[in-house]
Length: 164
Image (cartoon, rainbow, N blue to C red):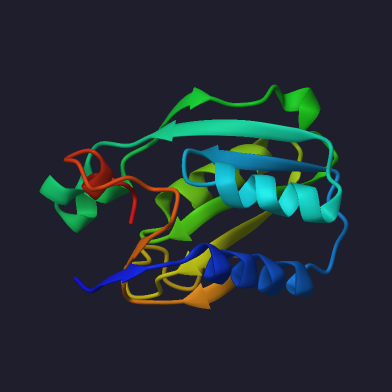
């Protein structure tokens, strides 16, 4: 798989592209850990969003499992209480939509709590997407590469297996 190194300047450009797409005002942001923390913080600052929530989702490492086994249910390690989401427009932020499992799981959980979720990522990989016609509501770039952001460290075994 091709690897693409992204600079801080490019991240800022991607953030600008996302903000230009937003058709709604959001009442809160839900950042998916760990990938959504940096872009979420940048977006929140630019948008003036004060209510920032986090979600942590765990899936089995997919590098060693077949495609059909990638559709297992997630374990939500951390997630906001339903009353923080109910009846509110929530911007769900992650860094990439590779298989789409994480963003889709978080979006579904926000919906189940009565919130109105909108997914947003810096990079969308339509070639790895497991959800046919489902894609992020907002994305800044489409790619087939493995993206390495400037805040990420050198690859380790766990790093190489993230949901991309």
